[in-house]
Amino acid sequence: MGKPIMAKATAVWLVDNTTLTFKQVADFCGLHELEVQGIADGDVATGVKGFDPIANNQLTQDEIDAAEKDPMYKLTLKFNAAAVGEEKRRGPRYTPLSKRQDRPASILWLVKFHPELTDGQVSKLVGTTKPTIQAIRERTHWNIANIQPIDPVALGLCKQSELDMAVQKANAKKAKDGEVMSDEERRKLVSTEQSLGMDPEPKMPAAISGLETFTLSEETASDEDAGEAILDADSLFNLPEGDNDEDDQP
Picture 1 (cartoon, rainbow, N blue to C red):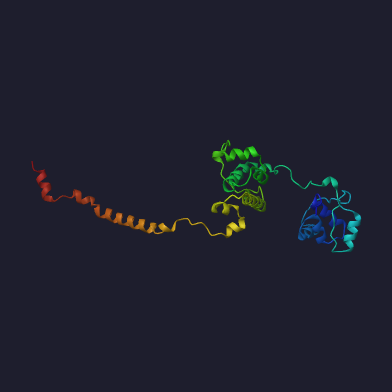
Picture 2: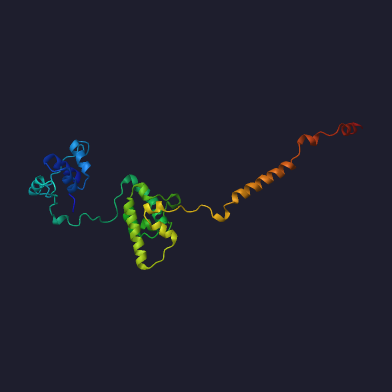
């Protein structure tokens, strides 16, 4: 079901001007029931002016009357032919000015850890242009030497669910095309939850697990040998008295 425009302001108006239940308002506006209760208590949407859905051709009075009589009744958004398809986002995602300097780092992260993603998918995830993605792929970007890869989810440029969905689509496309993926690619294509459940990769091969002890023993032995070879400095200069007397005679 479609959601009304200015959903929170519409919820404020419905709470103030109708006797609808919190659940009815929440379902119609796409909010949580506790959030609607917070609006009624004055804890949420403080200062938000109510948006009349009847005057703005989103709801009819008959629909509200029917819902007020039956608490189980669900409000239906009034059909507006001019609004069909408006919920679909066209072009790249809008990125706030405060986060635009982080986009190259997130692009580099996606290109490095998810090379299966197309330029179009990367563009939709972080809100950038294809020439910028291509420049980072080919390492011809003007600031490539100073760019460090950072997860776009950690930067707030996209949601984890959106990244997982894009990766799953890339996985499905590879499987459809019959391409064989390596174990490393399979690890990259799983979701975050699945990846966290995997066993950690070994940091050191088992064949050389005793290398540290062997090296330490060698170092200890070499230190002992060196200690035996060191002579007392005083013994080199304290010659017998008889030898000193002979040297003093002309």
